[in-house]
Length: 516
Image 1: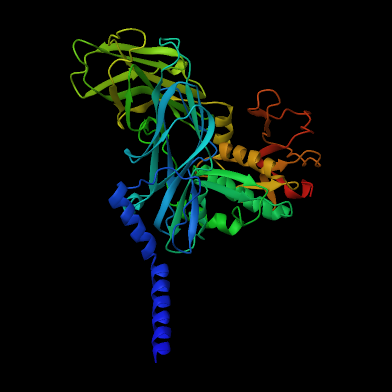
Image 2: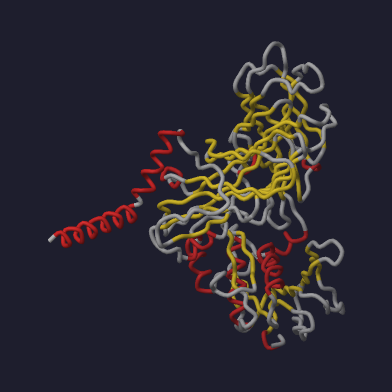
């Protein structure tokens, strides 16, 4: 009887141990004891990723993942955004930040990480070059919107080097492209648009070597449509596991087909997203930069005004704020004033002849606050570029040679396109950019059946038979400048023989005269 009782007791103890192990009660109890004895243990920096519970997980890259995110000197600011999947919704997860730091000896600094302008993590900078990682757990409130906006701030001082205006850069931090959201989802991430969001809002077009020429043309034109809708689109020599097939591309385009073309006449906001968003804290000066492009062929109206709207903190005594605005390194405005009001606003004329295809505006705010010695940083200053800061288009239109071609192609709908031979992924990427640039916004591009208006010619192919009448253009990559070279084809002029090009004939080219 006693043996039965001992056996029963052992069975019960084993069951209790199994229950405690399954429910993780022992570990939770130990954690509570540590909190009571030593205070809360902060989850700060991790080298290894913690697994989120659940079966369906996904890694979400930041938007524009190939664009470098680098913070140099004190202070420095950058921001990135992650787009959440829309069909499969996140239920839990964390933000993994991987950074490479290069810091001089004697530097006291920190990398601050904020989500939606709320500080969520910090990394203390260490001398030398090192790779650092930080995990930030996400809450349900972080998943409320469509995006997660993450801001980075590099703050610190160099206690060893001589202070003064000739100070060098004491610290550089690069946010690595491996930084990502690691999410647990309520269902598998399988839809085409969710895969695009997971890749950083990038459309990856699958372009394997075995793809047939007819299928290449169909897939190429779908990629062109994606580019024309403003989607970042790249052609990769990859299979359907890592990129989109023709069917998946149509699925993605179906979600944006109702979207209107970007309105080139609308004001362009400079501080609604990106590095200019948020409050700046600094000691002497801070700067905001904005780059904009006037694309040849886009019928874009050249910006006529810059509306600057800033929130500037109060200054002690009679100190003044000083504001300098430049366009393409030419002075637009220099102003000094007392910051007694929260907002400062000014509208600045932008000369049309100062602007080209690529432009940069820089706004610098500084003060005349005195310093007691060269090593005195002065008071901490606060400033913010408000979302109302914007470029306002004028009446002048930026025009170039492509505009004449687009006007001619605008009378055709649809525009038929033919391909003489198979393309590599790199060639497809280049040619898709050309087609997206020259195609009018309202035109439809279709594979040619009998007559083609645009023929994609590969090096070494037999050249198509040219039409007997009507204008013909040749579009090719410039040999020296790397830009697009568009020129009318003159009678008796030969066609390029070494590089891929577009042969454009609005009157039409018979497919029978195209090499196969």
